[in-house]
Structure formats: C-alpha cells, structure tokens
Image (tube, rainbow, N blue to C red; front, side):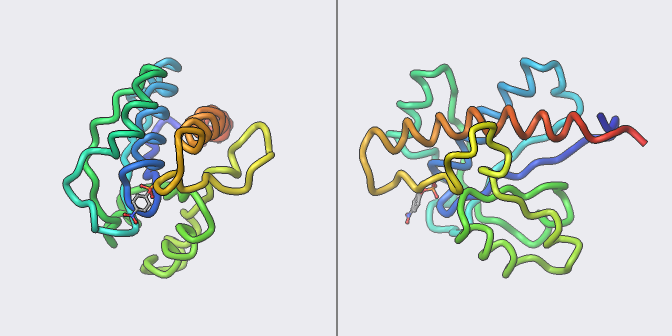
Length: 162
Ligand code: 4NP
C-alpha cells in the first residue's frame, strides 16, 4: 500500500444520509485495519441546502443500531475538494454527473468514482437515496456501504508502494 496519505471524500446529494454514513463506516473499517494514520476521510453534498446540519435522524438511528456514530455536519462540495482529495466517491449516477460538472480540470475528473464499483456483491449499480422512503431504504444503504467500504479498502490496499 502507498505510504503517503490517501484522502477520500464521499459525496451524495444532501450530505445528510448516504455520504455521512459512508464516512462513519469507512472510518470504522480503516480503524479496524489499523490504517487511520494513512487514510483521511470526509464527506460532502452536491447541495448546500442542509449545510451545518447533523445527518438525518432516521439515518442516525439506523446507523447507531449497527454501532456507527453519525456526527458529521453537512457541507457542500467545493472546488478545492478536487485538489485536496485523491478520490471523490459518489453514490449514484446523478452524483457522478454533478461532480463531473463541478470538476475544475481533467485530472479532477479522473478522481471521481462510484461507490457501488467497490461492492463485492455486484447486485446494485447505485446506493439508492433513502430520503423519501421507509426503514428498508436506510437498512439497504448501510448494507451496501458496509460491503463497498470493505471493497474500497481492499482496492486502496492493493495499490503498490512505489
Ligand atoms: P442524501 O439524501 O443525498 O443521501 O443525503 C438526501 C437528503 C436530502 C435531500 C435529498 C437527498 N433533499 O432533497 O433535501
């Protein structure tokens, strides 16, 4: 694995459901692997509508049942994120398209990834927005993110140290 720090930014629409959950889950996966000193993790939203808010209370409740503390504050993606992070990881195709529109240059576009590309079980091609749905949607988000975070760590860990 590369020995310089890798910086990951998870991105969804509002930064109150999916990406803060990805942030919390990835922090746990990285901590359990003893790699906290090598991987920095943050999240942001395409919209600034919920800026400053804690994650959605339903998402926090479902996350807490699995032991995740969702305590980040929503913030919108900013141009400097494309320079400050190595990977910007969106949850669905709309996030990917919006990130590509915001990317300041081609090098930034190359940093954009989709979360479901890291799934071990390739049964989903996006992490569905749970905001307007019921409890099952929030559980599905956590199931997909737990799988994809593990896959993401496997991918990062397999990058050779040059
Ligand atoms: P998220 O869910 O993108 O997973 O944070 C949403 C939260 C809020 C809204 C949409 C999606 N919204 O339109 O306010």
